[in-house]
Image (cartoon, rainbow, N blue to C red; front, side, top):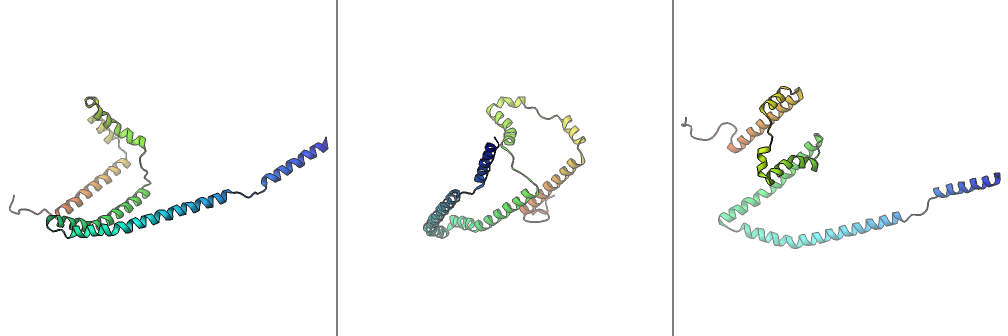
Length: 191
C-alpha cells in the first residue's frame, strides 16, 4: 500500500510541475498581428483623409475666394463671417477647457438617463395630455416659507453665492450690451 501511495504522490508532483511549465503561446503573436493590422488600417485611413483634404482644399479655397470678391451686402456678410471664424473657434476651445477644469474641480458627473427621465417625464405627460395641467400639484406658499425658515447655514450660503453669481453675470451682460461700463447712452434732457 505505501508503494501505491508513493506512486500517486510522484504522479501528482509530476502533474503539479507540469502545470507550472511555461509553454509557447500564440496569443502574443496574435496580438502583434492584430496591432499591425490596426496600424495598417489607421495609416490607410490617414492617407485617405489626407488625399481627400488635398483634393477638397483647393476647391474650398477657390469657393471662399470667390465669395470674398462678391460685393454689396452679401460680400459684407461673407467678410464678417469669415473674420469671425478664428475668434469663435478660439473662444470655443477656451470655454471647453475652462468647463473641463470646473467639471473636474467640482467633482461633477453627467446626470444619468434616469435623472433626465424623472425631470422630463411630467413635461412629456403634459404634452401628451394637456388636460393633466389641472392635476399638477404646485408647491404651497406655506410649504415654501417653511423650507426657507428651516434652511441650514450651508443652504443659505449656497443661495447667497448663487445670487451673487447671477447678479454679477447680469451686470457684466449689461456692460457688454451697453458697450459702456457706467450708465446708459440716451437723451440727457429726458426726465
